[in-house]
Every structure is written in C-alpha cells, then in structure tokens.
Image 1 (cartoon, rainbow, N blue to C red):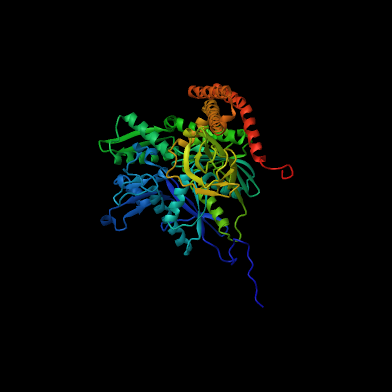
Image 2: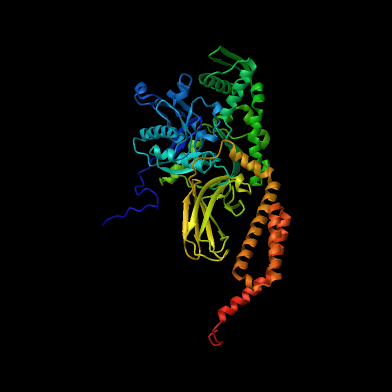
Length: 624
C-alpha cells in the first residue's frame, strides 16, 4: 500500500528538506545577509569571517583589473586613491532623477539620466552605471556568500528597505535583486524587521518604538506586538538624514576650526572617513584627534564629545521631531510606549541614546547588535515565507508612509488610501464623468498629503476608454488601489455598467528627492488652512463650470421653449457666473452657482414636460 506524503499548503513536501531563504539588509553604509540555522537567526560571514560587507563598489577599466570591479572591503580601501570610480552610499540615489540629487558631496561624476527609467547614472571607468546596477553587485555578493555557506542554491530573500522609501525606490530595490538573480520573497521595512528580531528574542508584548538611524536614512516606527502579530501603528522619519550627515557635520567643523579646505574629491573622501573614525572613537572615549592628510597640508584637530554633540545637535533634534510626529499619528504619549529599540550603527553615539532615553523616560533596548538586528529579523521572516517546518509563526502588518489618490476636476486630490494604512490593502472609490457623451477618462495617480495636485508627487497616468456615451454624471467608474505586501501599487478603473476596464502597475520613473517625503508631511500640517481655502476655491470653480456647461448644453438643445425675456434672464445669470469665475472669488462663485441653479429650475421643468409629451406621443392609454 502506498503512503501519502501530506504537507501544509506552501510548505516543503519533504519535512526534512529546508529551503534556503535569507534576510538581506541592503544598507547605505554596509550590508549583511542572515539566515535561520538550527532554529536561530545568525548573520553569515565571508571567507575571512566578516559578517559586514561595506556597501561600496569600485569599477575598473577591463585591462586594469580583469573582473572590472571590486566589492566591499577591497573597494572601501580604494575610496581615497580612486574616489571617482568608487561608489559608496548608492542607496541614497536609488529611484532618483538627476534633479533630485545633491551633487556637492559626491566624489564621483554623474552621467546623463537613463533613457528608459529616467534614473540618475554614475560615470565610471567601466561605463555609466545606474544605482540599480551598483546595488545589484552588492546583492549578488551577498547571494554568493549565502550559497557558499549552505552549499546550495538560494530559494529567495526578504530584503529590507527604509520605512520611508517610496514606490519608485522600492521598485528599484526589487529590480536590483532581480538583476542579482535573487527571488524576492518580500520587501519589509527596516524598523519592522528589527521589531521581529526583538519581539521573538525577548518575547515582548505591548507597544514599542523602533528608532532606526542608519548611514543614510532615519526611520521611526511605532508597533504593537501581541502573540506573534507585529502591527505597525505609525511610521515616520527623514529619508535625508543618517550617520553620513553626522560625519559631514564634524568634517565641516574641522575645516572651519583649522581654516583649511578640502579641494579635491580625494580630499573630501579622506576627510569624511577620518571624521567617521573620530565619531566612532567618541562613542567610547571623551576626546579624540581628527587627523587626515589633505593635498595642501595635514589637518589635525582635537575633538571632544561635547564639541561633537554641539555641532550635530540640530541633526539629533531633527530625529526627535519625527519621533513626536509618529507618536501623534499613533495617538499615543511617550509614557504609553513600553520600550524603545535602537537600530543602526549610528545609534551607538551617546547623544542619540541620551536623547531617546530622555524623551521616553526609560533606557532603550540595546542587547542585540544594532548593525545586525535588521538582517536577523528579515531572516526570521524569510524562513517563515519559505515554508520551512519549525519556522516562527508570526503575522506582519506594515503600513504605507504617504497617502495615495487621484486627481479630480480642478486639480484637486481625492485620497483613496490614507497614510499609515495597513498593507497589503485594496481600497476603492466611485467617480463619474464630467461632460455629456464622455467616452474616455484620464486618471492621474498621485502621492502626498496636500489637497492640490501641484503640491503632491505624480506617480502614473493612464486612460479608461470605451465608456458608453451617457449624460454627465450617469457613468459609475470604480477606481481601485491595491497595495501589496511590498508596498507596491496597482491601480485599476472599471465602468460598472459596461464592464470596460483599464489598469496600471505604478512604476514611476524615479523617486522623490532626498528630503521631499519629510517636506510633504511637514507642509501638509503647516499649510492646512491654506489648503482648505484652495480646495474650497477649486471645488467652487469646478461646480460653477459644470453648471454653466450643463445650462448652455440645455439651451442649445431646447432654448426654443423659453420666451425672449426668460432666455435673457438665463444669459444674464451665465454672464454673472462667468464674471465671478474670472474674479476667482470663492464666495461669489458659490453664490452665482446657486443663483444659476435656482434660475434654471423652471427651464428644467419645461424640458421634462416636453420629454414626457414626446415619449407618450402616438400611444393610447392602454399601451402606456
């Protein structure tokens, strides 16, 4: 008798066979890969026993190096000698266009934008490279490390991204993974990955704040942990703030203190590296010396921890502004947070730990390595998604950072998916046509918190065609926004009566500028009153235009029903409405629209009576 092999759906049919799934922290400064082995998540080392891979790629002319590139530690060592071909902090360029990039601090040259994606490209000895290609080199190195560790092919990976990465940046990350030959099981936010590691290691329950200060970005997430469910209540941060900015602040102070200048790209790279070394030394010692050989002369200056704290105080304050904002979004006070998790190597700075402890009133959790905790959490999630037996049983509920909506008449934004909405999600709203006989509808998908399209970020445009010609307002078009677990968006539009449908997978050509996400949120609060007035004005203008258009259409069709005086009265009302529109006075536009609506009531009754007479003409009472 044959025996049946029974397994849970999605799990390996062989309970003794494990799929090799890893978690990858693709960081600005350094990257790691981790996996669950023997029930424990651990970071995987390279052949020299190092778990950290510097996120640096050096491109060589083919004749010079054979392979054409160096990755990780070898590339890091070459940053000072060959800064123009050594690409570091490329994560800050992911999903960016040329206009979004601050070139002042870049030691390498930028080429023309990629013709297909519009993304910025970097000029190297091996030709122009996009940030996606550079990131793919780092991801491929981590993939090979994992496959060497297990002597098996990789089934897939969970890759972490900053919580404030927008749709373009997330898509660029997935593209880089695909280029590296990695099957992406899921993208998850870095603070959420850290919470997974801490939640399982500490059996934590309750509300926790994850303060994640990495090399290039800052994220703050407020999570509720309960019996294996990780629910993100609110997320915030600053996508243009990280440890790199602390290095630059210290370097600028040193130049100002000594009166020296960093003339070349090599000087700047050397100075930033020296500043980073001094920053790290000050985490353990009260005083250190920042010393670096510049082209003109050697720079040497003593730095105390108090001086470093002072010249970076504004940066630390920016992180706490985002923390307060996230708590307001979550409708919580600092006292309601049970614990704070510190993530990212930059959180080793004493001023960061003091600021967090002072704000929340309790010492933050630091028992897991802040460099490794994100990769460890991603590995736990990857083990579960791979369907391995014995994997942790957890449910991850993440959120989107900015609202999603479409443009409506008058340049207004109709939000369909609000920010901090749990994902995956699908939300829909019904819209209609503006003009009689309209057979097509143009849809403009936008992202942001402002009421006017001009103040938000454009994501995509598409058209719904083939709508049956109907009177204005008769068509019912359902627009559905679907955000998957990776935070990627699909928008569809369907005319309910005819079934005509169109859809678009939103793949914007490039992302928001470095500080645009934070700016968009800030402006949504500081300009709330102004936005309300602008929205009211735009709505009044649209309603007036609609009323004038409908009245003119009716007069063209049935104007003969009116006497000369009645026609003149309606023409006068239309003229008054047009005059109010030109003045752009909200109150006047609203009043004239109401007057026009009231003035056309008798005309509408005449048209209705005529329609009834025409419908009944030639029919007897029995037929009716």
